[in-house]
Image (cartoon, rainbow, N blue to C red):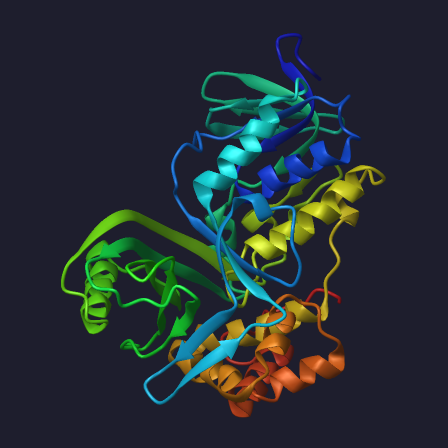
Length: 397
């Protein structure tokens, strides 16, 4: 029952991160939701530059106005080789979090049917016909709810599917020495000490003296803040920089898992973003996948009524599961796997594969560049549930 005191909306978004804001923005662009009341709830006011998103694209996108920098070339290296990657026909694009928030919220402010409340959600209760959302100060109700508040306990307290994290700390620095090539991003630098993990530096230069440097891991456990920052300092020194200032800092932790989030969807509640499995499990990339999924979701909202019918599994889910099965048990193999992929592989085909747009024949071309033994072993573990994965059950593709 809806209480007379509840504030009722057609749609409520619990969490106003990337996925939610993309979806709302595309609902506005469609012009088909002007008569629907929409509420966004988030404890974060989205007023700071708290993250950087990157994605590759062949053509201009609807995000072009907020792309702060793009690159046509990327660098991949380890201790044994380096390769300059010509990204053509792709570009590698960078969007600052604050630019994204400001752009979307400016558009939301012009919509009378959309409300943003800076409130923390503490409980969601679903009945047959309505959903009640309680914050620290208010109670709201809605017909359909789109949730992007990530429940780490639910995912990490299960053993069927490997769970890793892409975790990092980044510094945007300004150096007195001109050491950066602003026309080339460093996609992965595995020359840093691996220490039994998958560790690399990620560098996005915006001028000869300015760049974002992120020390990144694909692993199970976070480091102390000092460990990340010590490695960044060592890398800066290795680049030949002796004097610099830190303009901004950012940090993050992105779940990398093939856990079937979609099984938690109900008729009127759908999980989106990282909470819905929208993050690319094998890389932690979020922007491109969320862009695709939000477009699909807005189209679904205009014709579908049961959120349980939204998700469709693909072959790429299984490919990601194989890589995570390897890194889950042998985390130190990440450098060898990515190095094999990028040493001789076609960069355009690799990015197309990571965007989940390749044919099966193209998949094989990419997969054959990877070390075969760990993937064959992972295939047997996944399918037959060997060793510690005896209870692994695969959803139907």
